[in-house]
Image (tube, rainbow, N blue to C red; front, top):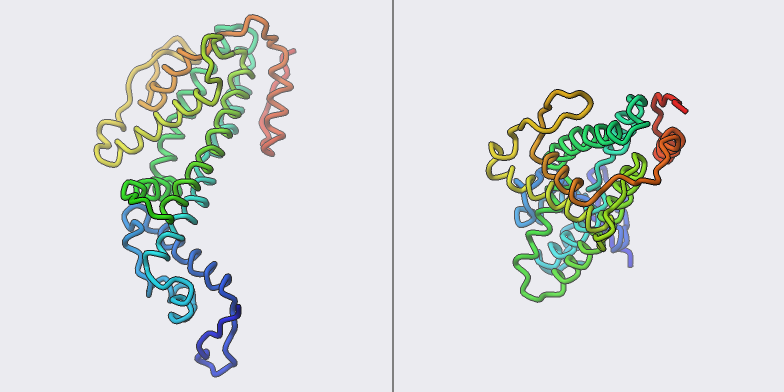
Length: 288
C-alpha cells in the first residue's frame, strides 16, 4: 500500500512511501532516539510527534499504521529487543586474549605458565568487559527493554518482546560459550567431568555475574568500581583485580581443570587460526 506524504516546501510533487517504508522509518527514528538517550530516556519517554518529525513522515499515515501510542511502543520494544541483543557481545575480548597469549610464548609449555596466562586474560578481559558493558548503549537499552516485561499483563505485544529477548539471549549465550571453549581449550583446560551443563552453563553464570555487577553499578558504583589485591598472574607479585574479574576467576576455578592430554605445541597454530577467524593480526612467536 502506497501512502502519499505532504507536499514539500519547494513545491515539488509529493513523495509516496509504502506502509512498510513508513514503519521502518518510524522504528529507526525511535531506536536512534533511544540509543542517544539510553536508560535516561526510557521507552515511556518517547514522544510520537517527535519521532514522526525525525522520521520525516506524515502524522496521518503513522496513525493509519498504529492507531495508538501503545501499539507503536509495543513494536518499538520488539524491534529494540531484536536489535540490541545482537550487539551485546564484546568484540574486543578475543583480540585482547590473542594478544596477551601471543606475547608470552615462554609460558606456553608448562601447566603453571598457562594457568598464569589464563588468569591474566581473565583479569584484563573481564575488567574490560565490565566497563564496556556499563558504557554500552545497546546493553542499557536491552536492560530497559527487559525491565518493560515487569509490567507484563498478558498482552500480545509484551509476549512478542519476551520471545524476541529469549531468542537474542540464546544467540548471545551460544556465542559466549563458543568463545570460552575456544579460549580455555587453547591453553589446555577442560571442564570438570562432573559438570553436565557444559560451556553453556559456564557462559550463563559468567555473563550473569558481569551484568549483575553492571546493574549494581547503576545505583552504587562505589561498590563495584573498587579494585582488590588478587592472585599473581604473569609475575609472582600480587596484582589488582576488578570485582568482575575476581568473580569470573572463581567460576573458572570451580569449573575447569588442566587437561592431562594437552599438547602445548598446538598453541601456535591455534592462535593463528583464531586470529584469522576475526581478521586479527598479532605477533605470534613460534616456540615449537
